[in-house]
Amino acid sequence: MPQQARLIYVHDPMCSWCWGFRPAFDALCAALDGRVAVTRLLGGLAADSDAAMPDAMQKHLQQTWRRIQQRIPGTRFNFDFWRDCRPRRSTWPACRAVIAARTLDPGAEPAMIDAIQRAYYLDARNPSDSATLIALAASLGLDDAAFAARLDDAATHATLAAEIAAARQMGVDSFPSLRLQTAGGTWPVTVDYTDSAPMHATVETLLAA
Image (cartoon, rainbow, N blue to C red; front, top):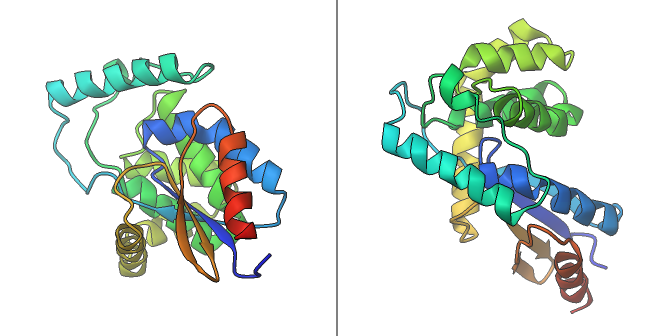
């Protein structure tokens, strides 16, 4: 197996399909058992906005949540979010929160993604709000003042822009997406939301090629 092989997971922490994909992705990573490096790349679903989400978009996203529940058994959503929060079509703050956590502690990246997803989908909290993100970072043991400073600084903005550009360069136009990077090139791995086996088989085939 080439040493350069790595699985690139392009995602957004506020992408509801990424939330549904978590169990299959975790199973895929376990099946690969550390033989392939896994890199998470932020695709940046929706740019910064202070505007309230239009009613039509809110209804569309609620329908998406219901569709995901039907397609991916066991996926849970707390629809109180739409009643208790002021939704905004703005996921870049949550993406920058992942970068800020990673910068302060590289090992905190998966935990920050998990915290954002659980806050949004299970606890009806709004990860578009900086206050929510700072509180989540503090709950993980990160220094909240240092995190708050990193959350919106120029370097964090630049890192997110670079990751979005890298995802587009690979031809990624939807989330979640998977790419396997080997010495021979970068190859798409078709996402399967309910079964890790086909994805694992694709990776093994590409590694053996």
